[in-house]
Image 1 (tube, helix red, strand yellow):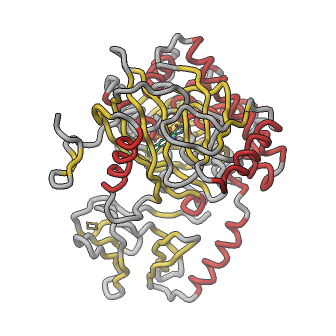
Image 2 (cartoon, helix red, strand yellow):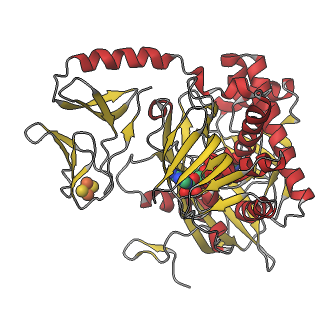
Image 3 (tube, protein in one colour):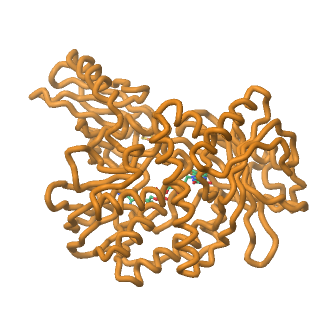
Length: 496
Ligand SMILES: Cc1cc2nc3c(=O)[nH]c(=O)nc-3n(C[C@H](O)[C@H](O)[C@H](O)COP(=O)(O)OP(=O)(O)OC[C@H]3O[C@@H](n4cnc5c(N)ncnc54)[C@H](O)[C@@H]3O)c2cc1C
Ligand code: FES
């Protein structure tokens, strides 16, 4: 058998997600005409499909538009644990945000497990859904107290949590918190079935249909890349990152972090359960039952901020080393990596995109726990759209980032020094971006990561362009392409 990785030959197989490799490709049509619906949902991952499904059940006319193929995004590259256990979070939530908001978080995620269980049962979905306990474990003495605090906090919020020092893992642990009544599944088998039910009920799903703009107001208009338009009373942005041309300073509220996965065949059986450690580097574990019998062990971890680091293969190598140290590895069958968006306060963002846009909603910043949070989003957004209220809306409210006003004031101060017709790189909340003031004093903010391969652009004061030092792409001061190799304009950052 060829070695999966050797220092001289590299990897013998390209990255490929097991979830995608083990399911059929979808073939929904592209949208080629203008349509009018009650709700347009942008993005066909687990968030968009679940939201569309719940809204359709309420009798609304729903269209989900997906830029590529449904379920191929982060949802096709996840670990697929269905948990209200999201690392160690409840003690911090209670301390930082109070009992009421912590309870909203706990109840909504427990509610998400129940909703997903119900969807699977009522629709007879064959998606390897299995009830499992979930564990967060500590390997250092320093974290034992944190585990104990988490158990107490989770119990006080009504979660079935308990403390243990024994886990059936092939390495020692000091302490762990156990959550009962959690689950695991095959995310694409689930998503494709739910999408099928949505379509059967008369919901519209369009693939290869990219939204490029949204106009809010009494009636919203979603503009598509092919020039077609969707008129909708409400729009839900479930595109993972709220795509460009949307308001709300999301560039300051969320940031991407990558994670790596290996699916291995081992000679020994996985003990059951789902596990994640407290310490870094992250190691997250579960098994995957195979259709023809047997199982794979899924090992996930090595999280880092997107774009940070030099040699990204090292993350796969570290996981391979971990696999060999802890399991009797027969074969490494799959490896893949993906990213999810983290929020600055570690709580997802679900609700109206800004206070000024009552008909546009967003769900993002799931911080690697978007399987249950997608169901939370679907329930909260369905309630906001249908009843104008949700018992869980407050904790996820996108308008909670009051410190953005302070940040923005310092940006304005910073940009006062910028003369008309000048551009410069600036840093806002640790994020680099480009600022340009036109001849009339209007400010344009853009993402200055080159859309070719991500190099940081430099301001060219002679030509008034953003130039790429890597392969020479150039952009106008406001981000349009001037010279290739890129052909994609820069992302524009809306201020309001
Ligand atoms: C390695 C890894 C492991 C994880 N493990 C877990 C776990 O065990 N449990 C858990 O709860 N969470 C986990 N997560 C997080 C979870 O998988 C994600 O939060 C979740 O899948 C996000 O779903 P989504 O529908 O919001 O996004 P996506 O699945 O990315 O879907 C968004 C869709 O929108 C489309 N889109 C984007 N822009 C446009 C546009 N302009 N027009 C039309 N369509 C557009 C994209 O093509 C994409 O298909 C993990 C994440 C990673 C990276
Ligand atoms: S990364 Fe900018 S031109 Fe290649």
